[in-house]
Image (cartoon, rainbow, N blue to C red; front, side):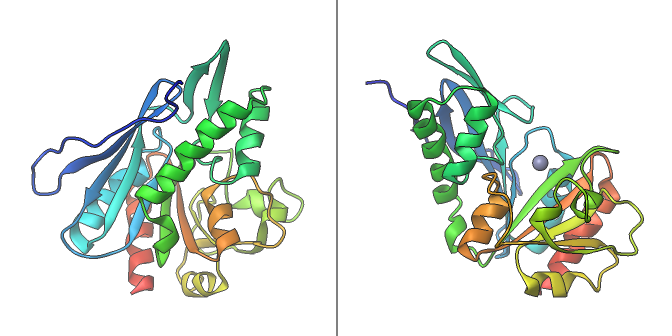
Length: 250
Ligand SMILES: [Zn+2]
């Protein structure tokens, strides 16, 4: 029988704030590494899942190193999607669309191939990530995403816009760039973050589209979650947002 998912626990480098490969996972023959940057000091868990979104990673590395906690990041091709072949088909999977069954099927539909074996492979991959990072046991899950000018922004959640249904409330803060916002799954976090000058979106946990993203997974389970969303290359803004978030949580 073909082994669908392989692990090998490996390696580490040994500088003061080292990058450590927690696990090397195999998804259809493509190696995906879960890499951690862990501080000696306790703190929150950060997770970056898109391998081409590095501004948030740089910001979190600096902040975790100083303040404590751990940053996990997925590494494979340097691109957003994880690509692999199975049988005669080629698949392209978004690692932020795989944390619910509905989400995985939607991803397979995007490749126009509904294969139960591939569904199980992707589901096992996602479940493994959730377990390795102990997502279900976290008091709060913090994620990092970067976007581009003119596409996805805080405005995408306003009435009449593409993601209107996913937002319960949108707080249009004093921060001028709409590409920078916090996306949260609880009214408590929304209340904590609106006094900052940044934009904040509260997910509508009852009406949101189940697209398999980690915010949906957390919303369904009552796990508090914050995505720090910033534009690619906006290093200072991104770092400010991560620092402000930790300040507010303390
Ligand atoms: Zn992203």
